[in-house]
Length: 370
Image (cartoon, rainbow, N blue to C red; front, side):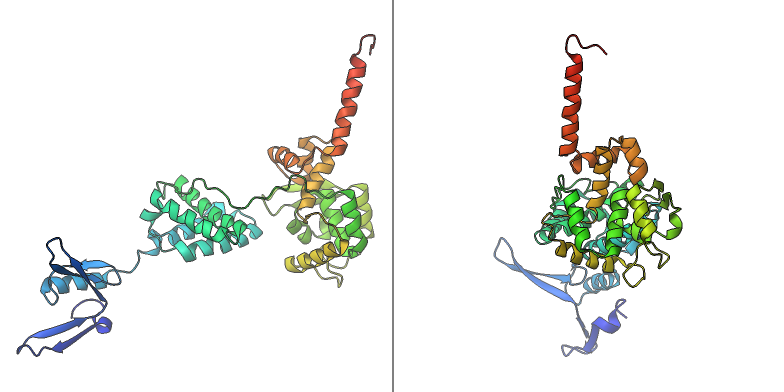
């Protein structure tokens, strides 16, 4: 027997060159001719699957031993020593399991794309700086058509490598930083009163209630679609956010209390389809997009922008970042960031600032006391 795979790859026949001699025909070998400096032609043989050079002359014991060893060698390292194995460990870690279900759903899709392309890469190559240009080239190729999706896939890989680096599983993260292809400047994109009026003029009552909940609580779409009537006690909404798992207690505004009081209780959840069944994510998206198209609103507005609009409204009302954070569930640092991102410096705030400045200057004039 010659090798681990002889039954599939090796065929032996009796040679006609002499009695007792064997000619063994080996499959999966590449023959390469190379012209040397003196003009002579040398022949080299390589095992095709493993690309290993076979030493010795064909048919010699040395040649057969090299072939036998190459045949026994696996095509790729064990999964535990590859990027696929690293991704498996990450998906079993606490950092992954504590993520919201919606975040994990998107993360799985991005990591699958990474694994399909790079999963067999050995860890010794993953933690080599030389792989960075290859990863960025893959990102750039995807970004030519889908920039946001390309960013998400590379960011998913970046998180895995960062997690592995912090735990000593790899010595170097070749994706510690990368330049994103997708740019979205939504600094001035908030729902103005005229947008809300235009949407409510054409939307079904079920969608109007969804808008009211979003703009008066600042909560995410997923949390609102899952919100049960038991979370509302007639005064406030109590919920645990899906992302971050933060417990919230949000008193109702006068407008929201009126909307919830008038809303029919047709299911366990507050928000339902017209037939009384709870919304699925896709069904709600399709209904929302259709109503938005009918509204004739020209601005590039999305449901998620209602969350930033809520922050802006609270800021215009004079709420501090700490007060806003107790309603929306953001950290105080993120509230400051959102106020900049969503242009909290609206005309109303600008007018209010000038009114305060004028009053201050009038009070500061000579002769003005008290």
